[in-house]
Length: 171
Image (tube, rainbow, N blue to C red; front, side, top):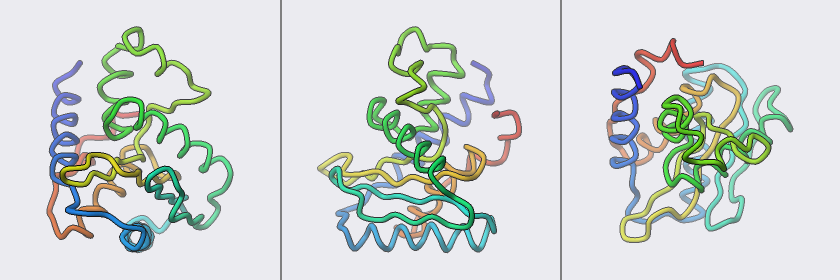
């Protein structure tokens, strides 16, 4: 694995460690979903699909612009990877696919059910662990990831590092 990818993995780990809620409710899901939409409109000016699941239930869903069924399909696959690997889907991509470790994680090669792509971020609560997932689809994968991370950070009032600085080499 190149040093650039190692640095990006460390940034994603820092994001995951910093973006932990004290508690998270359905009302918080609404606020996070609206924050994602607000961020898209302000910074990306492009339509995306947004979904937040909490305890296995979709509590927020919105399709912007031309987002549609294909985006929904990608989000489900990203969430499956996030659930299976226990990290953001982007970190799973960086640590498994890019590192050439698919043989160590046979489920990851199942592209019908899993997508090793950025865009799904676990919703973590102190003392509880993962209680849900926030996901988007419609931008390049590093942007999908950073959009969710930035939106969670804004909701929590925290600053986080970004993965977008050196991402032009990520397909």
